[in-house]
Image 1 (tube, helix red, strand yellow):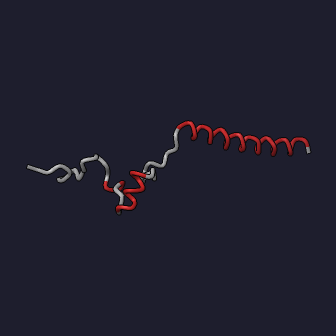
Image 2 (cartoon, one colour):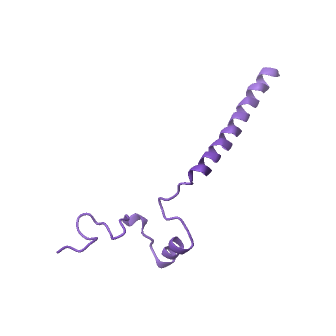
Image 3 (tube, helix red, strand yellow):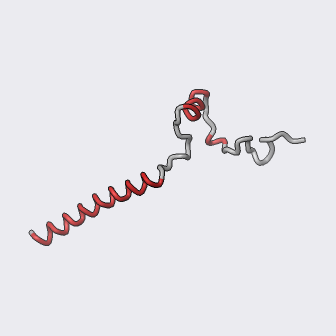
Length: 74
């Protein structure tokens, strides 16, 4: 009988990749208890991403309008 987590699949009981496993106990503690994100979880929540897009888009739009206005009225 084959053990769980061994064989050609190479999976583990949690269903995670080996790349996402902490490399020591300190990193494991940080990820589980202090909320440090694991590798590959670098996405912000949707509301914060939309807010960032609006702010950056507004700044870029103001710069473009300022440049166009500068060339038109000078």
